[in-house]
Image 1 (spheres, helix red, strand yellow):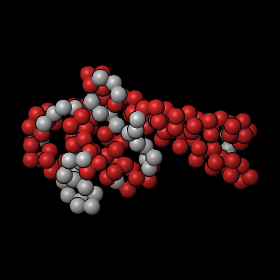
Image 2 (tube, rainbow, N blue to C red):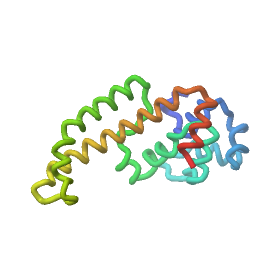
Image 3 (tube, rainbow, N blue to C red):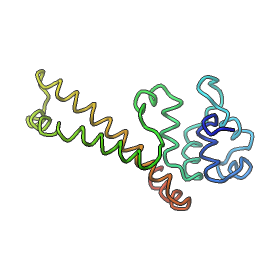
Amino acid sequence: MKESCKSIYRICRDRAGLTQEAAAPKLGVSVRALGNYEAYSLEVGKNMPPEDVVLCMAKVYGTPWLPLLHLKENTLIGKAIFPDVELTNLPLAFLKFQAEIGDIQPLESEMRKVILDNRIDEHELETSEIFIKELMEGIMSGWSLIFSAIEKRPLLEQRSQAFTLVR
C-alpha cells in the first residue's frame, strides 16, 4: 500500500517497525481497536482514536508530531490553525524556515514602533496584521522543521525526544 493512502497512525506505527499485534498492548488497546483507529478518516467519522491514545502512540512510536497531525487532519480547528505544518524532507524544511524568518526580520523595526506603547492603535492595525501573518507562517515552518529533524534521528533518540515534547 502506498504511504500516501495509509492513515497517519499506521504510517507512524510502520515507521516504528511495529505490527498491530505488537503495538496494541503497548498502547493499552485491542488489536481490533487499533485497526479501527488506523482505518479512521474524517469522511467516515467513526473510530477516531481518543486523545490519550494518540498521545500514547506518539510516545510508543517515537513520533512527537503525531498529535499535531491528528489535530490538523481530524479537526476543523486543527485544519484552521495548522494548515501549513507538514513533515517533509529536512533540507526543504530548513530552507522554508529560513525563508519565513527572512520575511519576519524586515518587519521587526516597524513592529517595535507599534508595540512600544503597549497597545495597537487603529492606524497600526495593518502593520500588526502583516507581522502576525508572517510570524504565524514562521512558527508553522518552525514546527515542520522540528518534526522533520526529529524524524531523521535514530529511533531510540526519537522515542526519548518524544517523551520531552509530548506529555
